[in-house]
Length: 298
Image (cartoon, rainbow, N blue to C red; front, side, top):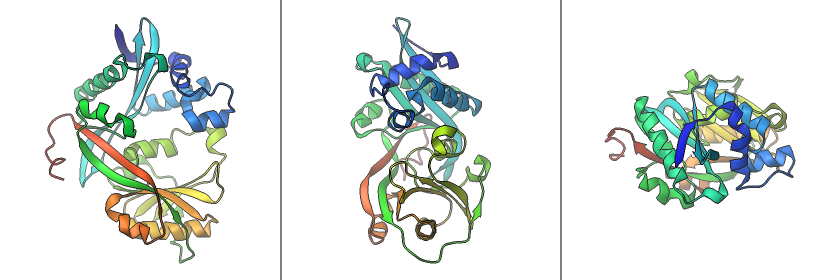
């Protein structure tokens, strides 16, 4: 019988076993393991991550089968804008089932339990960014609507008049009402949490990092572990194309030659005109926890 319960810090070794059963990184360096699996690759980094999650109101659940931890899933909670409306959002940021236990309903049990928890807490929607092969799984669980459709792109930087910036670290309070205009592939809060809270010093400090304010917009530049000429850009607030063009010039000034980001698909032609290379699609699905008809109305 599958038992679902809240994850505790002393579960970290068992949680790591779940993740590395699907991606064996035991003989890899700490950096390589982190890049391939995330903080769940090592007990030490898993403990830091789980502690950060709990301190910021997130929820982590584990699934047990015959007393053995065989799956883990996490929710991040926020109030943030979707299609122009602030919604109480529960975002399914990660779910993993141990390799030999897949196909036994463990993932479904974890998601159903998270849905119940989010409903009990009064959240309006649950969101998820599924891998392509998992879209059918989530649709069967009620994630039938597409809330965000974007494209992942590499865009060449260009010389130009870089915007005047104020370097600073924005609080979530300062961002929560702003739409995420660049870099989105999870909930907006998930990105803020990852960039400003859930950082592993020995690893995250190895690459370039810059955050600040440009006019009424906020941005983050995060360097690449594999390409010193590339930087990933995230931005909140403002006109998407104006912010993008300003950050392309700023990235050039900082010495980068490529910006990687995501942009809503409606801007496809605009970014192709900037020389963008399309790397893939990003789709965020939503499950109403009540009946917010605005989703279906676009």
